[in-house]
Image (tube, rainbow, N blue to C red; front, side):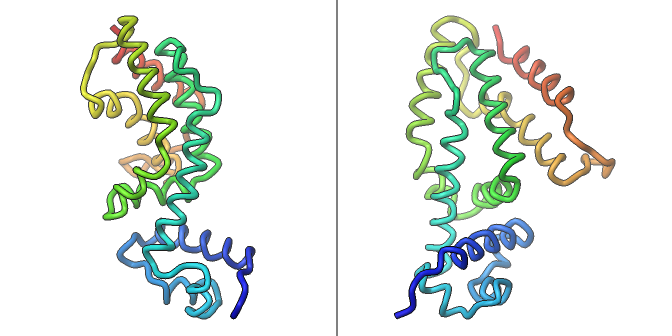
Length: 196
């Protein structure tokens, strides 16, 4: 029986993420992955039982990294603006440090893997955010709105800017590079929109 090679397994994971980001889930297969890694398909099955197992393992490990990044320095007792600022900093830092993993998560969110991806890693984060939201609503800092409304206003602008930055262009095809000035001006508008 062949043994696991950690560096080869890391190559497999990184290549899989790159391929999925570039070509989507539909264009991804174990055969293509093996070829891109310069290894045999049989070698992949030392590490993962099938394509689903590979994707779920990458999502689970990456999700743990993301969850840890989200709660770093986050205080659920903070004011609304302070807490949201930490969330923006943490999310933006993660997207800059892990651009391919962030884009991989985007692919997962619009796939049949979404539920398994989200269910596995956000428990501690959800508890902290639940407490944070309860506190800021209780203190009258923001209105109580459906979660989807809050998330859309609070974070969609950040993710849109990060995507423009990742792609290097805006919707009109004009070159775009996200600056701190644009990031925090957008944040100020978000806070203004959500605060009472």
